[in-house]
Length: 173
Image (cartoon, rainbow, N blue to C red; front, side, top):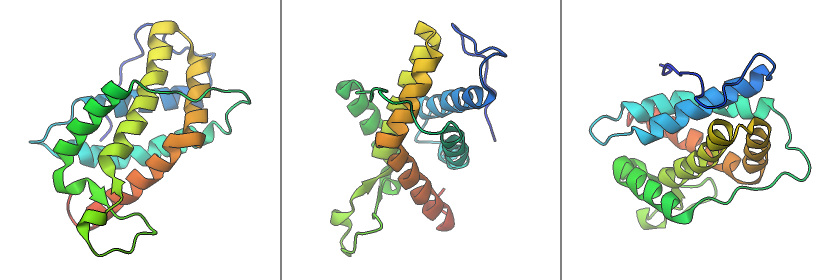
């Protein structure tokens, strides 16, 4: 179920903005709000996330390759760690997963973290939303999203989608 999204506050995206960019910004806002409102007592947020990620993936890939010379965003590491620690606590046993190339039978060797994936996606999307809302710089936000997707958070998106799919198949959502 998709959350109702209100228009962006400071710099609403108008009719002249490409529809694909509008869709991506709305999905980014949905994603960030979902992550920010996540609660340990209600795992519903994780179910909503598992249906939102494929739509986010489709929206960002629909924009195509990033422009040449786009910068890669570097997040505030302290804020990133706080978000990661919160998500890791909320996810509990759902957090760790095996990467496709892992073969060790020992849970200590698990190399993937859903909390890490969700945090990196969150940091990138939140950065773009700040550019749109506070600086009225939607073109830069979309350039950063596309570049970051190609350079970094796209892999996290794929890994999170795959892990959530596996959790759903094991009735752990």
